[in-house]
Length: 105
Image (cartoon, rainbow, N blue to C red):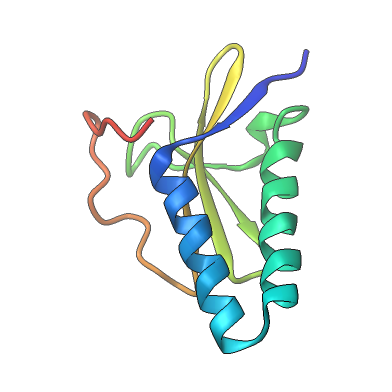
């Protein structure tokens, strides 16, 4: 069974911010390739959503998966959906601010 992958508004904003940063520091072409690859990695979670590391120590149900050693993808999984909650670039602290009652989905 394949899951549906959805991006929380916070994750979408982080993706746009990352695109802008890379476009400014390198080029729009590089930014487009990198952010597209992140989206593809997230969409690949539809077929094997539990492959990430469980991070119940941060928030129940939270999972993380690295991308190219530069991005941490934070997400949750239920019976039908993978919710991408955040995309953290270059060592950003993804543990800060996560609680059981976060409404980031």
